Amino acid sequence: MASNSPDLNNDLTDEQLQSYNQNGYLIIPNALSASTIAALLHEAQHMLSTFPLSSHPMTKFSTGASDDNNNNSNSSKNPHVGDAYFLTSGDKIRFFFEEDAFDPSTGALAKPKHRAINKIGHYLHELNPTFRSSTLTPYHAGIARRLGFRDPRVLQSMVICKQPAIGGKVGAHQDSTFLYTDPPSAVGFWIALEDATAENGCLSFAKGSHRRTPVRSRFVRKEDGGGVEFVDVGADGARFPAGLEVEQNQEQEEETYAMGEVKAGTLVLIHGNLLHQSQKNLSEKSRFIYTFHVIEGKNKYDERNWLQPPEKGFSKLYP
Image (cartoon, rainbow, N blue to C red; front, side, top):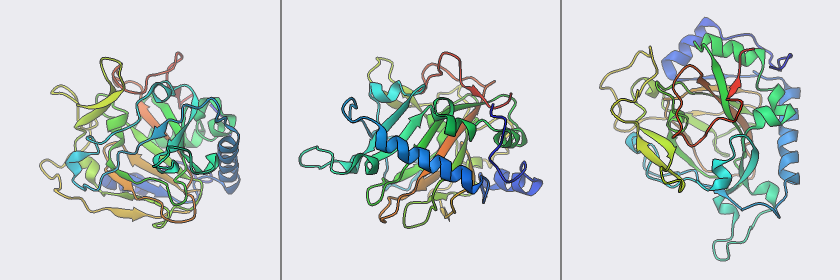
């Protein structure tokens, strides 16, 4: 674990914890210092400028976005990337293209490579020193303790670029669908590296949906090894985290989403059951963010999940 924390604040206050538990997310302005944010953004831009195209399989990342606002869809019927480049990225740093970065008539890349990438993932928190020192910190460990984690493990990290004019819409989803433990335990640590606005595709949240919307499906590897699919969690699979105060029979036919415009340096905590989304970036400004996800290491994480642990296991957040 890094010896120095880049944060400006201490652990969560009682009021912040209450807000997170009630709403399913928490916006913490100025959570990371300006110098830390600048270093992370510079490193991300450097990686985008220097990765080689010649050896890249040109894998695109589909967000699975849908105009259907029905919570029950949970984007589960839409396509997602599932090739070998993606499935073996859990212990590597890889680059995934925006679908709209290519000419639809020729299939050729239509944008400069640094303006064509959807995201960089999924092992930045271990392989890149700049991102590692800003992830495995006492500050984030303190937050995990306040959230009740016993053995928090960082299992993936990403820079999401939300490129100008082409940054794709991300439909309503729950993170625990993609990072399923039994019982669910995922929490997203989402850090704005640039201002996130309505124009460039900021997040929006269905307040309190984590307490009324079960995790119904999981994003898993197909049993025949041919990519990925969504499957039901099964009769025996937990659909809410242990100990969560659930609002029985209160699931909404159509959720109302609160927009979360934030400044660079803001940390947003996102409960794994919370429905959240973002719109396409139609502006001429990018919306770079860095996000990593934490799960409870003592909960069951099986071999069907698309993301499999590296040889040494998922990264410990506690020393």
